Image 1: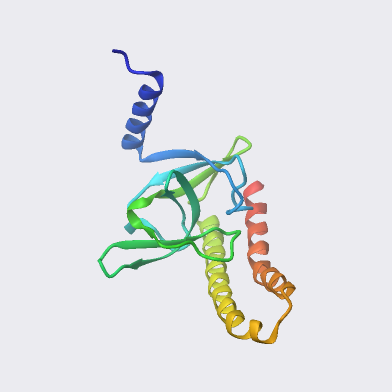
Image 2: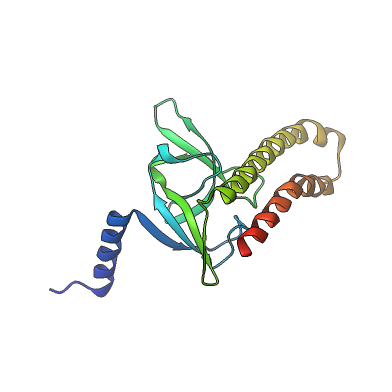
Length: 187
C-alpha cells in the first residue's frame, strides 16, 4: 500500500520542522493589525517557553486554530503548571491564560508582497517592545475601567458612548506607535 501524497507532504513538513525548528504560517485575521495584515507569511521559530521575552509575538494552539498574539507575561498555577498570557495588538482585553505547552514558538520574520522583514533586528525589537508596553498598559487601564464601570457607571447611568470614547483615547498611543512601525517596516 502506497502512502498518499498528503501523508508524504506531512511527513516531509514534520521532518523539515524537526531539522530547522522553523515553520511558516499564512496570517489570517485582524487582531495584530497593522503589524500583520491578512495574507502575510509569518516565519515562526520553535522555542521553549523559557526563551520567550516580553513583547515577543508568539503563536499558540487553541483547539484546532493557531493564534498569533503578543506575549505579555507568564504565571504559574497552584498545580505548578506554567501559563502564558498574550494579547492581540488590536484588542483591549488580554487572552485567557494558555498552557505554556501549547506555545508553538515566536514570530521572527514576516513576508509581505515578496519582501522579507526580520523582526529580530535591534531597531525593530525596540519598537515592538514599546508597542508591547503600551499594549500591557492598555490592558491594565481597560481592566481597571471595567471594574470602575461596573461599580460606578451603572450606578450613575453614564451614557454607553463613553465606552467608545475611552477606547479611542486608550488606543491612540498604540495606533501611533503601530503606524511608526508600519512606516519603518514598509520602507
